[in-house]
Amino acid sequence: MKEKIKELCQQIEKEKNVKILFAIENGSRAWRMDSKDSDYDVRFVFVRDVKEYIQINQPGDVIEASFDENGNKCAAEGAIVDMVGFDIFKYARMLTSSNPTTIEWLTSDIVYYGEQNKVFKEFAIKNFSKISLYFHYKSMGRNNYLKYLKSGNLVTYKKYLYAYRGLINAKWVVHKGTVPPIKFVDAIKGMESIIPENIMNKLNEIIKLKAEGKEKDIIQNIVSMDNYFEEFLKNDDEAPKEKTYATFNELNDEIRRIILK
Image 1 (cartoon, rainbow, N blue to C red):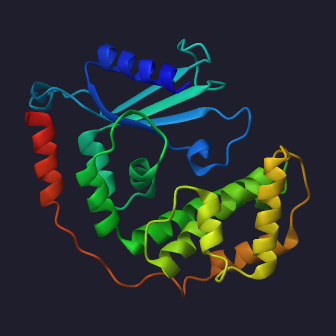
Image 2 (spheres, helix red, strand yellow):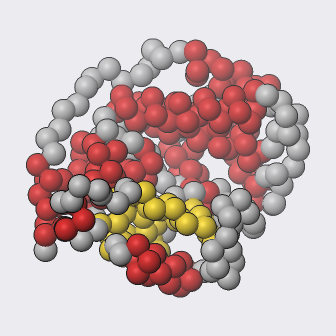
């Protein structure tokens, strides 16, 4: 499939008249939470010809495309390959606000096409805002918790993993002070001394059940995990307080180098 995705990237380049700088996996496969039927969440950064940036009507800064298992275009619903790309300027603006998704694009270890930009990656790792990253991940966890677990409808082990990824990553930012690992299992292991033992045991149990293909089994809500998550949502005492300030000179220089070369 990696070779097929590479071909799809080249196809998009020709159709949209862009250059894809890099394309990576940024879904359950990157987090190592995928199932047998998981799709491919391909995310990429692209750049246009310099002339297209200095005209009145500029092209859109987002490219979206969906494909079936044979590489044919199809509707987004039910697609095997879901591709979303950001123009380099849109991507850089989101990166400077410590958007966790754009940082994960640089830390994903599944690269389909091109090469992740070293200047952007170094900037993200050195200058990310702990406050922004913490609340981004907390919001992500809250949304998944309310949508998939609080409702009590069709609760599954997989939905617990998606909700708890937000919680674990938020706490990682607080207690480790670094960007969380892209692999969720690594993040869980790193929080063993922080998360209560009974919650850790449940998470590890769910990881094991997932490996056995039971992540989509319909289950009853796990009361202890729900209660711990509710407490997490209510309390922001541990949230980072210090603000960070970064200049964007290196990003601007790198963007100019890429576009003008």
